[in-house]
Length: 249
Length: 226
Image 1 (cartoon, helix red, strand yellow):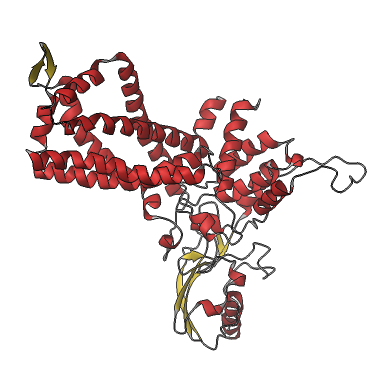
Image 2: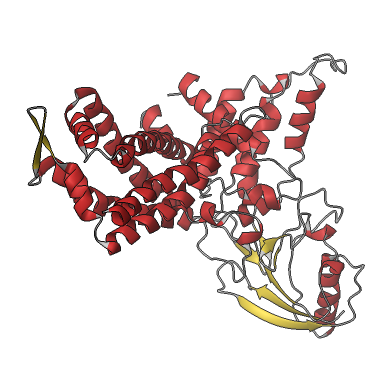
C-alpha cells in the first residue's frame, strides 16, 4: 500500500506545532496501524530526523496506552484501540490525518503524546476501596450475584485510554469517571467510600477542566471497550444521592 | 460555599438544572398546545378567549406561569454557563472530525437550536403575551361578560405569510431540540433502565414530532381558512 500521512508534529508542550506530510510505501494490509508508524519512524531515523512520538505499550488492546485521532475519529475508523486497527481498514492511496487527543486536560507533551495524568488524579480522588490488613479472606466469602458482578466487570473493562474525552464535543470525561465510579458502587467492597467517592471524583473531574455531558453518545460509540452510557446515568444517581445524604458540608 | 451552591455549580449540578427546567418546559408545552387547540373549535374564538382570560387571571395558573418564566431563564443561563465551560475544555480543535459517525446532529447543536428557539420566543411573546398583559386589546362580550379578544389578535397576526412561515420554521427547530432534549433529560436525572428507557425514547420521538406539528398547524390553519 502507498499512503500519504498528515501527522501533527509538535516539539514540546509550548511549541505551536503543525502538520507535516509524509509519503509512505510498501505497507502491508496485515500491519497494525502502529506497525505502519514504526516503519515510518525507521525511515525517519535512518534519514537522521526526529521520529514521531506516540504512546503505545502492550499492543494487545488491553493497556489503554495508545491513542491517536485518525481521520476524524479516536482510534480511527473501527471501534477498537489504535494498536488493534489494521491497515486493511484503509485503501491504497489514502491520505490519513493523525492528530493527538485534543482537550485542555490532556496537554500535548510532544507530537502525538498527550499527558493523561488527569485521569490518574480522578482515580486518586476516590477510585479505590479500603482493604483491611490481616489474614487473607476466603474466596467467594462475600456473595455477589453473577449479574451484578458482570455489570461491575463491564464497567471495569475501561482501560482509561481517553477516547471518550477525545470523541466528546465538550472534551468531557464523564464516561471514564462514570465507569470508575460504577465498578465500585455496584460491589459490596465499594460501599464504605461510596458517597465520598462520587463527590470527590466528580469534583476532581471538574477541577481538571473537562467539559460537561450533552448526552450525544459519541463517547460510547467510540469506546474501544464498549462502556455504556448507562454508567453515566448511574454516576449521576450516585452523585445526586451522595450530595443530598452525605455529611460533607 | 455551602454544599447547595457547590453542587449547583458543578457540571453535574448544572446539568441537573438543565434537565429539570427542560422537563418542566416540556410539561408547559403540553399544556400550551392542548389549550391552543381551542383555536380549531370554530366558535369564533369564544372558548379560546375564555381560556386565555382564565390563564392570565387564575392564581394557581399564575404560580405555574412564574415557574415557567423562571425555567426559561434558568435554562438559558445554565446553558450559557455549561457551554462556556465546554468550549474552554478543548482550546485546540481537530483539523478533521467525523462527529456524524458517532452522534446525532441535533445532540451536537442543542445550543444553536436553543438560541433560535429563544429568538422565536421573544418575538412570539412580544406578539401575543405582552399584548394580552399590557397592550391595547380589542374587547368582546359573551353572555354579558367582557373578555379581551386575543382570538382576533391571533387571526390578524397569521394573515402575514412571513410570520406564518417563521412560526412553522421555528417549530422545526423546536422539534430537533426536543428530539434530543426529551430523552437526554431523563438520562441526566439518572433514569436509565432497561424497562423504562425504551419507553422514554419512544415517547420522546412521538412528542418531538406531534407537539411541533400541532403548533405549526395553528398559524397554517388560520392563514388558509380566513
